[in-house]
Length: 281
Image (cartoon, rainbow, N blue to C red):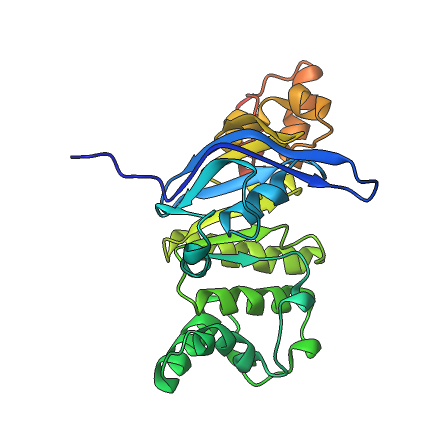
């Protein structure tokens, strides 16, 4: 049996942009990364680390200066493939207000399939199905501006799902939301990965959002500086702090308790794990 090709393959990706002072800033430096089909990948790093630039390359919003990125075997530098790439890899941005185009929720979700020229009955099916998947089926006839931030972001995700993508890239989709909205969106993302098998690339600066990922990569100054399972990455508390990053609260607590001489394992991620460890210590 041959090995299954990754759904996203980046090889020696480099990209620079020119800032307001006309200086060239290297946003990505020689980044190589493979993402498997069905994987839930979280990318963390503080502002300016290159994580959003990487996300935009996957969706062909930016083309590499050097190197290559393939999405399902399609080269993002090929202008003729951009449309196909964006149907394969849908993108959800930080501000939900910038993504909603219609005055009624169901029209917004229908926007993509309509542009693809699907017949009305197929569009109807896709809209109903997408709203159900994000838990917003009761809001089809609402005006988007009446919804909460979390609800708007779920509608934006429904609009992407209606295009039937195999990959969803989320560029800090919870950054502008309150804790309840963040929770709603994260539940939706986990569901789409687990139940629908959609490959997720989730860019965030909230460490708690990385706990359920299959893999976490840490970016700093345009490079991948760490990668592994959430447990493998977050156990490196000192290294992450030296990069100016936090770790999930429970991991931080475990780290502090160990420093005080309490015998609990490093790299705990959840409250349940902490309770279990404390009961056994």
